[in-house]
Amino acid sequence: MSVMKRVSMIFKAKANKALDKMEDPRETLDYSYQRQLEMLTQVRRGVADVATSRKRVELQMNKLQQDQTRLEGQAKQALGAGREDLAREALSRRAALQTQYGDLETQYHSLQADEEKLTAASQRLQAKVEAFRTQKETIKATYTAAEAQSRIGEAVSGISEEMGDVGMAVQRAQDKTAQMQARAGAIDELMASGALDDVTGTQRDDIQAELDQMRGGHDVELELERLKGEIGGGPKREIESGPVDGQAQATQASGAEQPQAGESS
Amino acid sequence: MIVRILGEGQFQVDDSAAAELNVLDSALEKAVNAGDERALRPALAALLDRVRTLGTPLAEDAIEPSDLILPYADAGLADVREMLHGEGLIPG
Image (cartoon, rainbow over all chains, first blue to last red; front, side, top):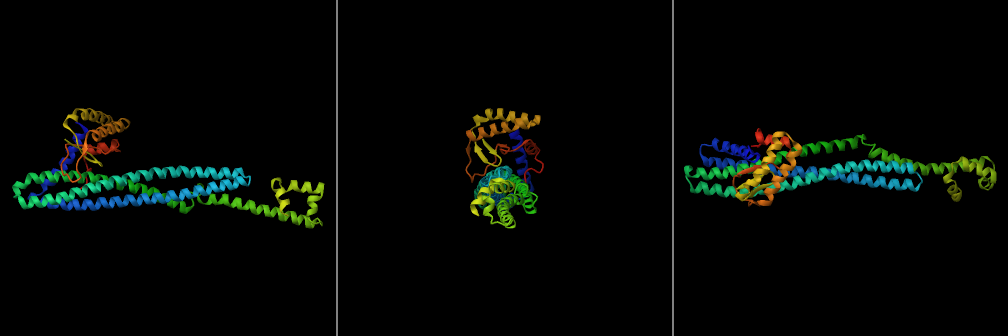
């Protein structure tokens, strides 16, 4: 049998079951109305849960964005200091973060879409619940139990279908939110434990440490030169001015920074 | 007739569209029976698209049972199968 007919039959069976339960059909109205109010609360809570989940993903995205910016800055700094290897490392870590950021972005859009759908569902249900309340009062005031039967049947199966639909949507959103919360929690935990350090925290600091060390190392070289000069007896200027000695020492003290050292002393 | 797309709401669709929708529904049914997830998604998307195009959304405060109910747009094979069996499907 056709898919759309089978699905609608299942919904109808559900509504009929609810109707059959009640001896006085007017009781069905009150019972159904109570269920509707509960469902409204449930769907609103669902919207709030999805929103919370979306915000959490948003925070993680911001964090990753900051890390990426920092790594790019470090890559520039490393390149400026002639350390292409460090720059490459920083950029490859940034690329890893970018992948993770992409995953979060997909989650974010999916949650955003869910939130919009659930909000719309909540508004539809709200409008129907209000209409139902009015109908319920009219039916109770105007009709005897027997007369009311068919009108109640229609209103109740209409609203019961809506509630079934909304209920499923809330359930789906909750399942998905729970999954995403678990994933977000895992990322948070990994970030906190340092296990993700190969892509974020500590290794990024390693790059910074090496950049800092380069600067420090540079100073050490200068000190070394100065001390060597003192032990050698002459002022250090002689090292540079002495044509043969000076050249030999400069070569030992590993090249590229040597001219700078000369300038600053 | 009134057609509901789960998760989206109800549409008033002219009865004359029934034949066209039935063809699309058959394709969907075939995919479900064959357990063909790849065929299911486009078949479902085509059917839902047609309902959205041909139909006009029902007023928000209308309380009417639908003649036909369709799975939500991102339903997979397992979801549709579950819907067709109805076990524990509809809460409440």
